Image (cartoon, rainbow, N blue to C red; front, side, top):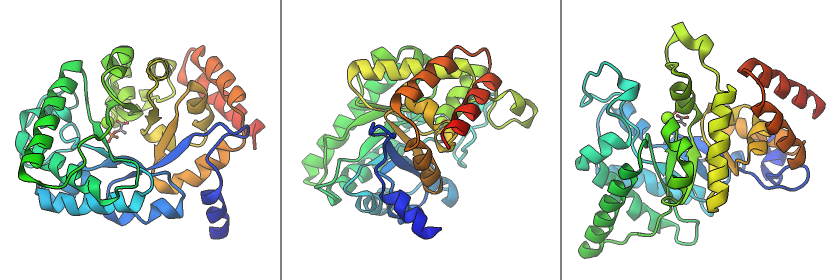
Length: 327
Ligand code: PEP
Ligand code: MG
């Protein structure tokens, strides 16, 4: 079986008719870096950096972060690491967090970072410095969590520029020109994706939160878990709108929410026009096996039909049937 896995890891990541779809890894801890090679991941599509802080129960300083980020950049070379900046708040609380009546809609992600330069600046410095460690690799990418409006991106760019200027003034080695992307996980961003696409270098669709916000269903609440459907046509419509906007602007769009790990959904996401999928390394072999079994045309036809379904259950049935026909 492990030989089989090595074979899949080495096979090209493309549809049966040769349409390339990058398969990347979601990681949270340094211990996962060796898995990139084992599963043939084309880099890290989502590094949930907040997990480093949450497991320690405190903030890591610049030097501590730099060591981890440097190791990630080296492990992923020649591919890129997508560093999602600290996505704290919501269900991810640190001692510094405040109590809020509606944490999912509250002080979280980029909102915290823009209010707390003491958190944002050391993280940016650490990753700008780590970026020089693999000079021939694709540059690391900076991914902003929980964006809801364009002004947040503009504000972030100012801090980014100031941070680069400070490193230059100090004579500290760093790589200043990193691609900047945003999580598309709030419906306002998906609906205005064409506007956002002119201001960023890539999109990463966070279907976990996008589903929660599109359907008004708390992703962690058992009482409403039966209403939480990532395959709801309304959610798929938001993904489609995001992908079309990205295509129009010529920027890549990945999906890094849990659905990207589900091989049943792979043809649908590819058919919607997603250019890369990012999932926990262990799922990548299965996803690649399915990816290599269908053509782009077939996937696009599936996506068109899925978008016309009235509910998630009907979409699920379409996917099951498609998979049965391609096994
Ligand atoms: C998401 O929201 O889909 C996502 C990938 O981010 P997280 O699960 O860390 O919120
Ligand atoms: Mg999220």
